Image (cartoon, rainbow over all chains, first blue to last red; front, side):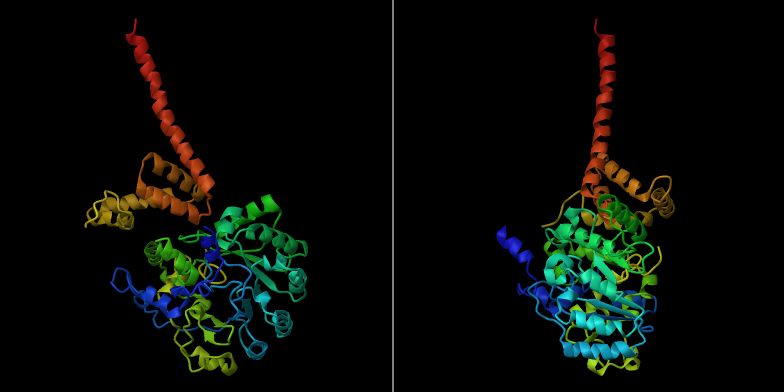
Length: 359
Length: 112
């Protein structure tokens, strides 16, 4: 029992699990039900509607991963982040990112991790990046980091000072579901962090201090209707804890990394893939996030999305690193797809900004 | 060794195939079915819980799987699901017991 608990608190990387290796994940996603013809590959599926190869639209979002270090070990984490991950972006790479931020046509800057705040250069980077005048400056905060340690207690005020748009994960309005997915005690700490953010003006309906929540299903099922879920979350969090927030983004769990590990261990993998393929929506393909986003990894490499980053599928371009960034060359590429992409095209679609089709 | 279960969870995915052997009736059924579960005077969430309770009283494993998953997708908690099952169970047992009145009537009529 103790051994199992300890295992859950470690990343796949630390456990030296096969699934911490990108090509092993890709093998799993290419073989079995996809190789034997029971299910069509994603490429076959989008080819039916002449949507292959998938090409980028105008770049709108630059998503930068500041490192895989995190104070939580969430059961579904596609980054395989955790306290035992040491990969973090250096100041030199951040400086290269800043040059790009100053010149890019993208209007949104999206900082993610791990817990991006754990990067020792995080505040310096935010201060410098905020001067670049991006329209929407997002930090994906896991909430508990705000309460993890004294040195983070002033983060809400720091966010406010730089008008950062805070987006935070919250799997459910009940303790049990949240703690099962994100770790024991996470719910209570998240509630306190949300209350602190509300106190300084974040998430209040007319406030321009934006606070959005992300909902990921806590298991092998797809998210429900985003608007309905948002209503349920708002009602429950207000009634139980007097908490307000702006929007809820419902995100589908993609079958990679720790969620893939969970799917296989719980014998849900095949059923989940059938669900994703059954729910495939060709209309969602038009708006998948890889078409308007570029993802930068902690070591400065460029990817079509955060998920391709974790599968080590670098952009199919002669420009592959932030140090040689050239938007024109990068835009002239084919987006790399595999079976995990079914996750972004199921139902109303899924992206870091929630569904991609109006509900 | 061949599988010989009466109920195979994978068969649920083939439910739509019933139209293969009777297109018109199958399509009419699904049209009706889908209409029933649309948001109406009752919310889709309430309908999902009713469906879950009825799935149990009808003892349909396919329906139980389908509406348990549907409930999770809607954010319905396991406590709410179990309460719905108890509502079904109460009606089922109540329906059995209320026939006891018929038995009592019969006894009273037949006995001296």
